[in-house]
Length: 120
Image (cartoon, rainbow, N blue to C red; front, side, top):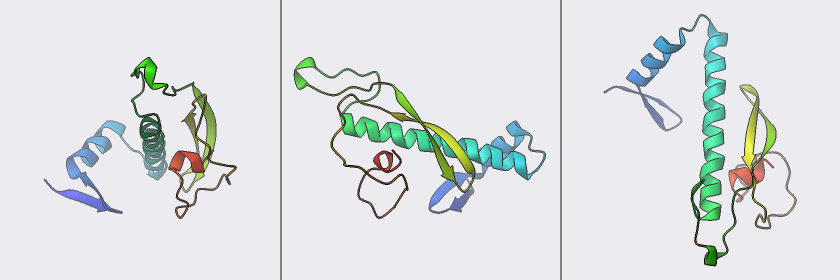
């Protein structure tokens, strides 16, 4: 199986070819629109995984009542500016978030905070 490598991520060529066949791209704008949608999905999933790690359980999974765990409490909408343009995402919200202080809305890789905390 041949793969295409970009920034350390390997995608099987079959996946790329299936995407091309299913989307029927007509021009580069169609391709960029598809990439923007994929970026949004990956970004959203990163936030969900971080929330799972923060709470210690997955979405819709209930922890034991005696553990006193926090639960998700809906989403806040946020527009993120990227190289692909503006992307609207939903940031998971919890009633009692851990203290993280007031942070800049800019995403900084050097900041040790989680990705979700950096874009709030």
